[in-house]
Length: 284
Image 1 (cartoon, rainbow, N blue to C red):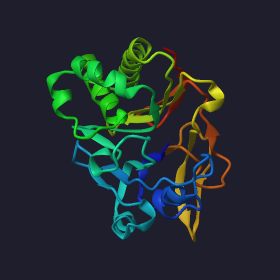
Image 2: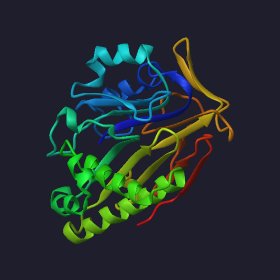
Image 3: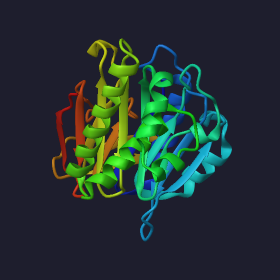
């Protein structure tokens, strides 16, 4: 499994997510606290949105995040209002290579996943057959995550609308299609899907599994007036503030402040452009 962090709010340095917090994402790449295996060293990636550009920038590498000096330098000087960052622990049997590193990008959309779609080998061929030509041709790697994102992209295009409700509806349709494929071609296998999908303005995140809820991967949210790092201490100002200016979704809390709340299992989180956040059940 993997670890990831999503941020949306006032522009901040990538280092405030990747290197400065006591439990930064780079720290989680070698010392994850909420996984049986603490290492996530099979590559990393960062996607970030900048003013004036619809498509996010993307930096990925197959090297471990903890040893990549370029990542530290980039994080030190780069700021963004919307960031996705991911450290990878490759699913057994899947290749370790840059095309398989998250996040994935298609036009304005960016996506990252922590988990596993059980029986992926059995459903891959019928899944590919169900994709549009553009979604099929856009796949570069071999992961279940990127294939699910291709399906998601088709559903977003099919919906035609924008906003968190449209993204959430597309997510639900894609998940239902994956679940149907698994039931038909890989009965008895389970889906583990903690994920974030964003277009840079709105976002949806989920914590989902078809397995016993006790086996779901961890996922947390935090919101408040602003997330800051000062003197080596990172925290959310006024955590829990409904009309704040910062929202975070993370596999594990980055810092020890009180604002982190666990996302309920089998729920979806919608994040609006005004940074209001709502949580709703997610079932298939």
